[in-house]
Image (cartoon, rainbow, N blue to C red):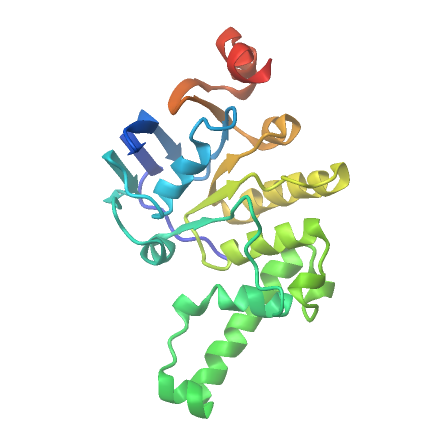
Length: 259
């Protein structure tokens, strides 16, 4: 399992970013950077703009203003599939996997953009096809094994427990060989044991790959357990950012979010 090489110190730069819907600003002139290999947590109340931010970073929305720089390249307005090839991978609040495919095939499908065999080779199963397929299977098995899912290779994704479906979604994101991984509430709906496993998985991913991670999460134990830096969004603006422990002790943050 590898990670794309990052040329710049900051893998991601967000400069004066804004987006409006019906005249209302969902994200209002925010700026921040993500360093190569950093794990940055993003918290805030519902409606603060967290998922909207992820939707802009992953190409689902186009910013009304500002710029997004990925490893020195302006990516404003690029489609999600192109951004995936450039190194942005994400998970969603609602799990997006193929229930009727095996766990292994779910991960292999995420690697289609890297397979080089042509239509004819695929139709007639020429040696080039089998070479690519065997390599994809090997990489997919390595990722799943790394996440503790070796025994589920041949299981259908829909038969997995909720926690393992979440891990499968992360495995699919890792299969795209990202520079930066966007995790949108990965612990949503998990019990305590599953959340504990997720924390261990996120830490292992960082240690193994060095990939930069942006994490949106409401579970403060998870956020504080893995984040190196924290950003608090409120009404589409950055309320506070910095050391996680210092941020959550800020009076404005307590008033706006933590209660």
